[in-house]
Image 1 (cartoon, one colour):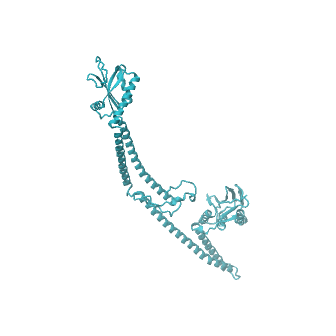
Image 2 (tube, one colour):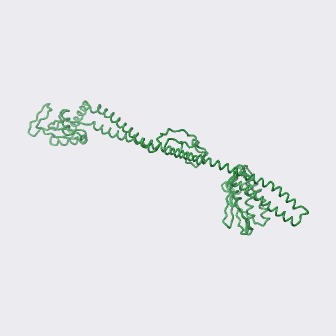
Image 3 (cartoon, helix red, strand yellow):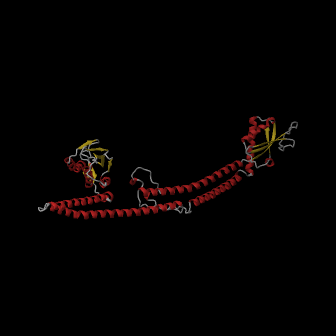
Length: 483
């Protein structure tokens, strides 16, 4: 599963592969993360030990054949003797400073040497004889990396079995026997390498297990993100048989229940909207007829004072019923499914707002209100367009002016501020709230309707009531004309 990109781009522009991966990746079914971890540890240990054994056996066999055979040992001993002779010649070593051979042994730590010197007073015996005399003084030189498991007798026996060699000194000679264990160096390297390789195999086995868990968690996170932010119908796949699988299954059940709740809520909202619309229509139809009869009765020539009072009271009651029916329609718009009633079209901005505001402004001035205008942003360019639903935008404007006629204080002017900022036309209205409204009350449905419609036919509609002043603001995008 591809993880969800952490991008600020709209969801529609993100990688569409997010909703394509749905195949099971073959997750082992251990039943529990603990069992899976123990299984991974055991498997890693078995593989690591197997690798260690194989590397050790193959390497030891190769070393035994190539470096520990008698022929290889004999050749290396001769090479060591030649190198020792060069060292003696270069450093002009004599019998009195024979201990300087230790410097050569320090550079060759896998070598053990026996040096036989004649005793003072013994005649020098020229000739090819290489057998040491029992009277010879024996000096031993042992390399620093000789295996500690080899005791002294074993080393001496190995050196003497390899034969004796003559080393020429300045004016004399000595007899040496040498034993070398160069293959131990390769054994050490193999031991270290095999242990490191086994540890690496064990760690990689654990890393593979942990990586599999992390990949599953990332897939689960991506699925949840898609469900919560992009597509509620996206199915969360459960893999394996452990705690992560159980969690995925629970989240999938929760998603299905949420879908059921959403569907039930939508059905209830639609039924509620249809009921309100039907009741409102059923009430308004006879009210329209009733209002017609009332108008006819008011014009009847034989209407006396008593009957005129009854007709007036009937008209007032009918108007109240009409107001309740209008409030029901507003409730339907504010809390119902208003999107279905929205149709967006392009309009000339100046012409539309002149039509929406002109009649209301004239009526407000005739009623005695003072209207003031301030432009604080850019001007609305000639030919600018807006994309909106004009009838529902008119509902917002009508509601604003209706509230002002009910609650605005005539002692202060009503201020309209308008301007264009970053292709957004902002219209703000501010009026002082009248303290005496003759018992007028508001249930706030009209403003909630404006907020809801503002999000559908414009960018937004917002309002504020601080107790002294009422401020409302309408923001709508403007399409500038092409130059």
